[in-house]
Length: 588
Ligand code: PEP
Ligand code: MG
Image (cartoon, rainbow, N blue to C red; front, side, top):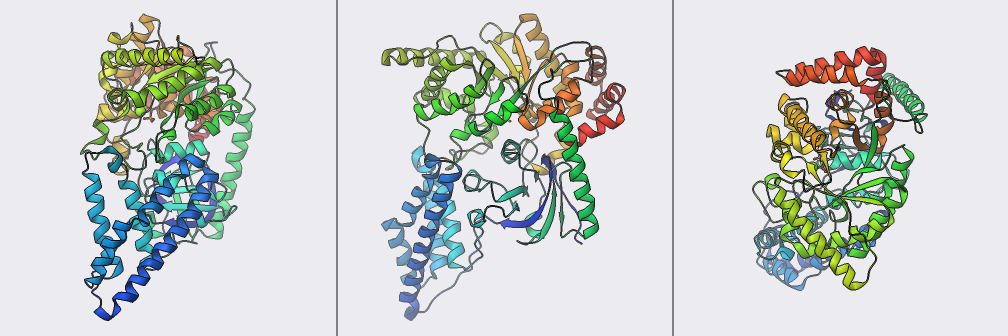
């Protein structure tokens, strides 16, 4: 039996199924010169492959329409148009007439085009690079007769474990959720896009496996243990039985936690905690409400943009927001404005930047593209008529950004008034505290914002200078680092003295020791993915204000993340007992 592959737990749950390898990367093409007499046949072979690729893309598009929607699937029309482009065809055929093989000719032209589009000053052209890459891979795979790795080919009920290097947006929208039981990727970490998406979809996932794609074949039976972050290829019957037993125990633990759905999140001394859901796709809102969430603490809106050929219209956004708001009648729904950039890229990508996480992203992009931003702001102000909507700005470093955003919000409201469209003007505007700059200067924001929400995923990344998506740095990504805890404590202090609402919506809130630290630091509103709410509620109901504060004080004064962790563990064992703590750690 091959050794267990160890990765990072991205989304809990144990599943057993056949591996489905998805190698979405440009294959290597060896130079091959053809004889003059072969040219005509080679051109026919090229045209045949283009036709086959177009046909395949039509099927992919139909499937994406079912899975993700008509607008999202329109991206595949762009790819079909590229394949049918007369200039592209003429250029490739010219090279074939100069005795290059069809695959080499196509490869060279695609490299040229990708380079040319990528350097263009026109953002529309740059956005097409991702489509070119997809077309490049698809046609070469056909010309080289490589196995067809499209996830689209999987029949519903296949129970497949998708094994891939990374899950790009264009692959994500092709996924048929009825065919896939779990996701395993070489790249990624707990806070990367693929992990967040898997948790949203409730699909067990292990990321950061480094080289799973080179160790497995399609069809290999595997056990994916999303809870512990492992992947076991070709398990023996004895191992299968062990895992079946564990899966049963996990299911029983979940069933027990589900009984808490209507219980209050109240600490043992009576302190009330508010648990909200992070919602990444409007589809999840109802499930989130059923999990016992008291509102939405973070609705990410990138999923309206990522994997799309064009920005969504005001109407389409309005409808998406209203769907979420209607699932949470009478409860707050915090909607974050576009946080595109970094690891959340639209299909064509962004302008190439050497350092995208420090680049033109999130609020920076929105303020520089006010017309595009105002479409979102108008949709939000209109949606706010239906509930308790709050708008949250990501990646803020200075209060000036808030002021500029507020100015655009006022313009958006004025535009709606001129159009006579119903909307609300008094929507609270808050910020994510996810940069050390925002945390250190939190006091300078208090007169301009209605709330703070600490985004620990990025706060940890920017404080420790550790890329949150880099699987090889996982052990260095330590949310319990004293620098992080001190920034959080400082922000809580500022919020408390200014009487501003403060919450945490990053991943820290979903991990028991870290949630305990946050409670101990005085946070009383936590937002996590819906699947994490029951376990978090169980934890909250077993701990007290005084003991959590005492443990957090020790953690705060600790010199290392390990010492902080130990202090929190000791505190939690004292409050919950070892068995319950281990159970909750196992489910996180
Ligand atoms: C965060 O940074 O903590 C956060 C919640 O936002 P995201 O993971 O979308 O960057
Ligand atoms: Mg963030």
